[in-house]
Image (cartoon, rainbow, N blue to C red; front, side):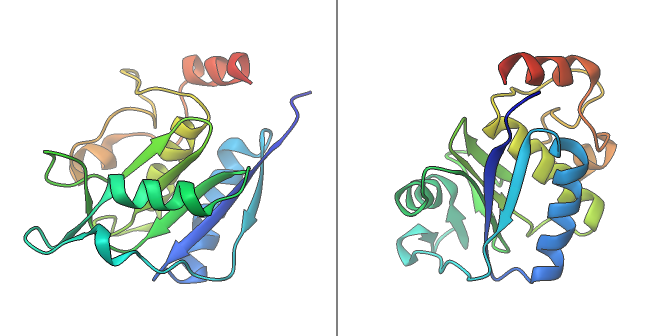
Length: 165
């Protein structure tokens, strides 16, 4: 029996109904390893994370902000704003293994896409890397690629996760 870890879900400008959808997808995939705790209060986005020329938020700055605010538990911060990383046009999310992740729902237009990318980012928090199989951990560089991914981990990633934990 694996001891469950606690994941706290934070939000900014995201309604609780969307957080409930994320909670559902995460429980379906990681219910045997995670206890999920939804934080009711919103976190305000730091002004210094906004890049005026790009009209996007810098994901690295957001990530550092989350790390400075979170407690010892794992954390997922769901935001509505568009984010970028270094030279990339945009990203759906970013993660620090065994710590936290940011998920932007800005370009994710339905519950399935939001759920897939939440599972993906939490997979990174739990130590999984990108996967080349037909797997939710497959890297997505566009909404079209994200649509093609399944909503679950492949058998190889499930085994890896159990080995890691």
